[in-house]
Length: 344
Image (tube, rainbow, N blue to C red):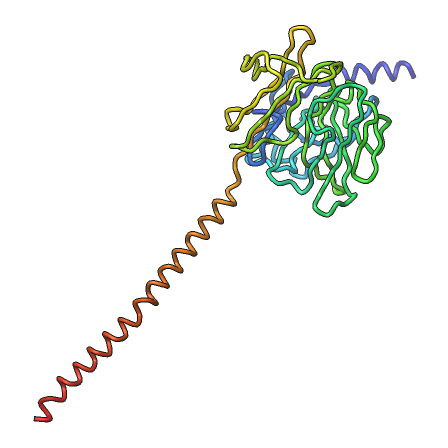
């Protein structure tokens, strides 16, 4: 038995390794392009690639589901030209060649998170921020328009574990609400809502930290709106720290309790964090900026065109009586001229 296990281990080690990467990035807005790239470094020719999503995982095993359109990525690139919220998930790839098929191991996992403009469900976080202190209660609720209980809260942790709140030891789920009674740092991860049919919506990156956190919005900020960031300290009565604020590693504001951007634009999108010289610094949070919806503009344009048509009709109707009188007079004049010679 030991010999068989040893042979099995050597067989696994001898297998070529498939390596998966994502381009241009893991976090996307609906409509963005994304490519999953699978490579076999030991020998790069003659491989046919298959694509899977991770459906469940534990310390001992992982479960995968083959994508229905896996064959279109057979050449090593699985590309989506316009990402939809349904593409949110954790992906793996595998390659094979020869007859009988010689297969690689399953690749490393790569998550893809797609945020939609108006998803059918929203993940509501309480307290409403993406960073949280340790040893506090945290509530995550999947809320839709009909307040149904058909949603499950799932998460993907930093240790690359895919977990379900309803069957976990770290939280409890009642209806569509997942409650973590006392947060710990291993609760850090991406949380989202999953439908009964397995579709994933509204991923949110949650970070649990010891002392200093950045208070930032859970949802994307709309262009033109204001944005307020605060630096919070766990053991302070006022909590708000007078700290320095950074964007993408560059200092943008120093020694203030809050940072306010009065009119947000797309250029404000990026990674933010705060730092106190004595208390330490917060983790980084990604601030996403979404464009203003075109719906209002379309309605306005449609209304303007309606008004324009009405004005034209009004003008025509206003002129009609004068035109009618003119036509009648011309007709009478012509008749009179026509009858005069005969009468003479």
